[in-house]
Image (cartoon, rainbow, N blue to C red; front, side, top):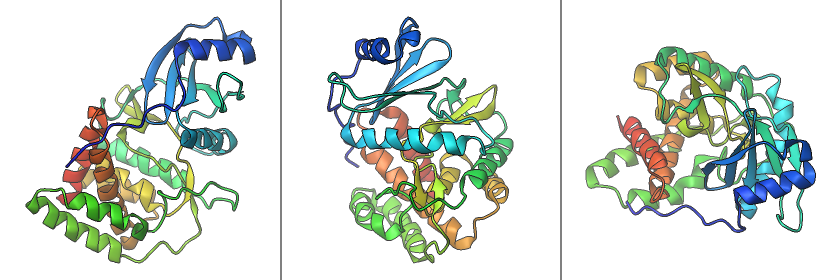
Length: 292
């Protein structure tokens, strides 16, 4: 499968820019040390002292996602059983930087993609319970993502294109998985709040336990199967059953669609990981879990 590089930044983002913005808008934080923590598809993330992170969007599309976090995450955080990075300060656009940006709390831990939980059964119960709390009916004003939380038919073209590049044996199995997921009844309930981008690089593990869920830029509303796909990204079959039980609301159709979403996202990760071995590893693991 051909892998593509991540999108280029549309504006220059740097530690120096972060310092200038802090000096102008949050001078009480400007003397704290700043260092780059991650420079990803959508955001530059910098550590700010011991307690905070700064998130600056790199692309126009990401700027809208930051706005969603700023608007909705403080409202959702209070009813979730795990910490989430609800913004504690908001930065305004300036002549130097065209978009809003955020200061969020630093949450300790390493991403699950690099630090697997000690007890997968306990971790499955924790994550299932978190999604049970998150997946409440969303208000009409909630964000709608054109790529996540939608009916699987909306991802069919991308799946067919990606499957064409697989080895024949994998392609045959993946097509059967996709056909079963696509044939499952669509979500018939109200649009639910979704994380929208829940994978092992957006889950923190501290002292062997899942400790936080981060990066809500794709926060949206829709079919919960999108988020439930994380079960194939993190857990073997036995622990997936624990996850499903802890979640409590996944009927057979939803679970089938969740497996379909795991296939969709594994193919996305594999296709767009030429310069991101971490996401390629997540894609490979998820793809193999879906096919077994």
